[in-house]
Picture 1: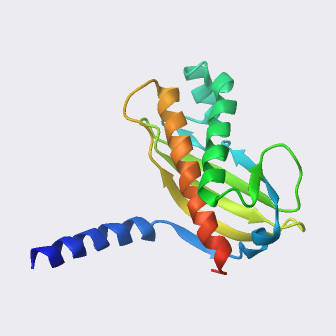
Picture 2: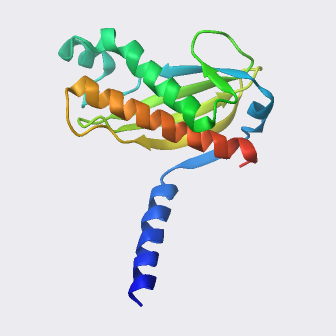
Length: 167
C-alpha cells in the first residue's frame, strides 16, 4: 500500500510539473533542417523585479555577461535537442526559434516561451512556460547563468519531443 501511495505521489508531482508547460503547433519541419537561427529576447523580461534596462543599471556587469548567458543557453539547448538541428545565433536560416525570456527570479530560475517562425514569417509552433532552475550559491549573474543553462536544456528536450509529432 505504501508503494502505491508513493507512486501516486510521484506521478501527481510529475503531472503537475508537466501541466505547466504546453506545446502547440507543428515543429516537425525542423526534422529536415540542419541549422536553425535562435533569437533570445529579454525586452519583456522581469529580472529580479526590474526591466532589463533597470537591471543593467543595478547590475553593472549585465551587458558584459549577457553574451555568456546567451551562449550557455544555446549550448544547453543544443545538448537537449541532440544537436540536430543545430541552433545558431548569428546566421539567417529559413526557420527561426524566437525565445522570449519572461521572468528571471533572484535565485536565477527562469521562465520563458518559445515560438517557431516559418520562412513566411508565421508562427507555426509554440512552447510555453518552460522553467529552468537557477543556482544555489554565487553572485546574481552566476545564478542567472545557471538558470539560463538549465532552461536551455529544458527547452531543448521539449523541442526534441515536439519535433517527433504534430501537437
